[in-house]
Length: 461
Image (cartoon, rainbow, N blue to C red; front, side, top):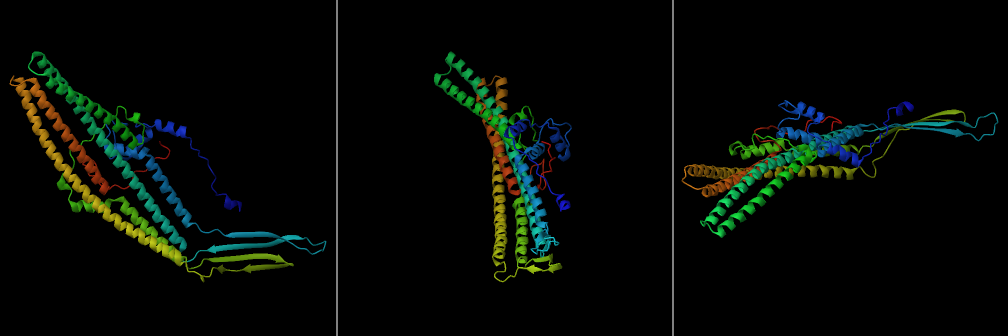
């Protein structure tokens, strides 16, 4: 008995201290040695230094995998599913009974207490129940691992969206600041004209009103950048101050994939093959199928081999009595019906999910193509306006125009640049939605099938 109990687990307390957890979160950095080792082990192009001088999407995604609380939750769910396999495969323990016997005979030479009985009950599962139960748990563990892959993709998607917004909003803030400076210079020119009688007060009031609007737009643009910093830090699972002074890079940001590289048939094929939730649903179906097999096997009763020994009246009595439950009043038809219905339900859910995935991919591709067309038109307009501004500068340098006319063309140039930037933002967000529809990276810096995050080191955060 003591030998059997020697392998038992013992309880280890792990209390949660909210203040300590909060301090640990505030101490997270992107120069953590554990994170550096994680980057070095998993980046395709190993960084020359850690932290890298410039962070791209691939490196930031690994930061999210390392720190994200959602990934930590998914990891523990995988561990729980793995433990369930052990539970499902456990054999039932034998049952031992041991008790004394008291003899009421009055003989003084006779000891009244003696070993009365000893019994041993060996339960034996039949019809392969343990195998079906184990197989069902293994399929559920597969589903948990795929769910972790879904979580990892969600983390990457949030990081990508936050990085797109941050980089483009920084450019937008720079354009807004340039527009404010240009309008401020125009106000000075118009004010000088008013003083000399070449312009009226209404023209100056309009210019000042436009300048006030530009100042508001510039302040709002800076506020968006600060909000984007916080959103990226939240997606990475680190405090906002950890990104202070960090430089980012995305070489393909201005060069989204061309429409010709994404045909509807190819997009649909990649969505069906790459979507992790579809594969998770298939694992759920396999688990439901094994559960049905188990319930069918439950029709056949388990066998109990019961043996015992007793001492009575100076006689040694040995007993052997196998027993089983007689399937007379029910043959487990209710649980079988429930298991069959559950399998049918999962199958129907898979078909519905597959149809939804195909529709999502198709709509996402239509939106992306529309965004690409708008981007091309906006860039064409911006290019035309940039030529006009260059001509205006040459005319100003040659004395053929004045500074106010050049400022007007400059404002138009900045407006078309802002429109092209907004079109690029829409295109990149539409590309992100298309990637989400397929759960597959599409830009030039990352490609291939996405499934799981690399394993994180234990206790390295």
